[in-house]
Length: 244
Image 1 (cartoon, helix red, strand yellow):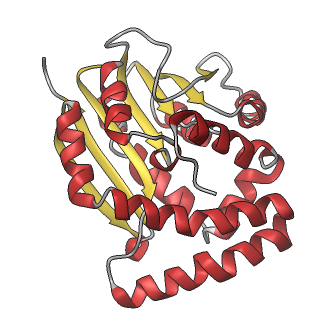
Image 2 (cartoon, rainbow, N blue to C red):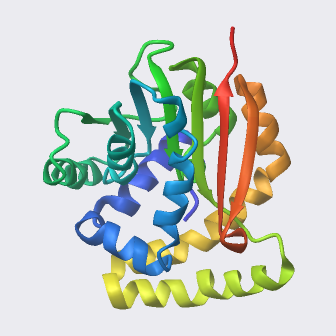
């Protein structure tokens, strides 16, 4: 199921998520035992203190992070996502939250963002690297659209570093999650469940934490930090765009 080129990865993501949005947010929280919301809040914690005026949220999906940014700051937020069906649900969520004036959703690719250089005061991105062919080039593109000194934060799944918890994680992602997805969300969620664990393992085989830390610096970020969440199930990273 792993796509091999940039175009293939993008098309794969579109197919994978096209039929999910109707219950995406609810099932994502159930199947993560509520940790997804906790991880998102920890990521946004690194954006709030800077009081940014304009924030970009990449891989915005159904606008969960974009709406949290709007709720916790006075920012105008632009959310970008590859999948149009996800964005349609996101638009409904934005309207329901009465944030139409402050949250704008745009269809686009993280690898080629439709914005001029140094447009945004802050940026977030969530669960992105498994759907791009070149994470380093993608980080460089993200850095391009933020101003010097801008805060950037990300959230990604992780493989637990402890052998004990990694065993439990492997059993849940390979065995329990696909079945739970099928029962609660049908065949579409079964496919997502089957893909999730192997895709996370593959990501860290190809791009371990040391590589990721170095990639942030290579892209032009400084003061880079990371926090392992929930015994190693999630990873929040943050940094600032270095001055040119």
